[in-house]
Image (cartoon, rainbow, N blue to C red; front, side):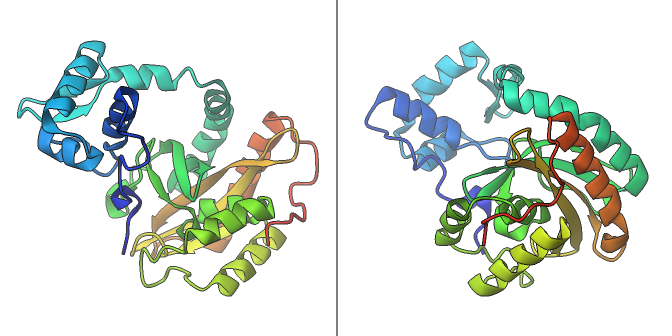
Length: 270
């Protein structure tokens, strides 16, 4: 089973250049593990330890990374400050937050706001219920997980153009658990059902013991841009009864983004 965090970090950058080495080191960090040694980062980025040390020292001065008392490296406050300057995503988070708060109160489940990045979903924001100890959210803000295994990922893909869906399928259907959908035709059939119902489910497909219900968010052009979900312990989540609340929240965010068309439209995704 290949988790998102294990997918060859740092391998996408051209490490023959100084900028490429910097990007490879930054890409070596992941949401599942917050701190790394110098050796670990150098190995994950495929750069030499002396080069990694020099780059990390510069990043530390810039507050891009910081050292823990044990000498390990973690990302610094500078990236948090910069993340708030991305206009479209910040606007989406600001508009979605009131609906996320209402959804948290109404469902008592963990609430996630995500967007699609390649074949993964990227978490833009999350709100955790006080019951999180019984079904903790393992996906942090900025974290990634395979879109094909998550309710939010399937909700987005169901309303995405066919070329987006095909690009994801070419990368393969991840088998995160024994419940993950790994058959192409079954996955496409699932997307058609989601497009019909306007809501997607994850029955322990991403994490064993966790269930989730998600729905898409559309912008003023009618394009799907994100999704919201509620998740919790699989044994305690009445998914179908929570679906109307999730759809109401995503419809509200879509209207706030200027969406004025029917909430469910027939798309070319599959």
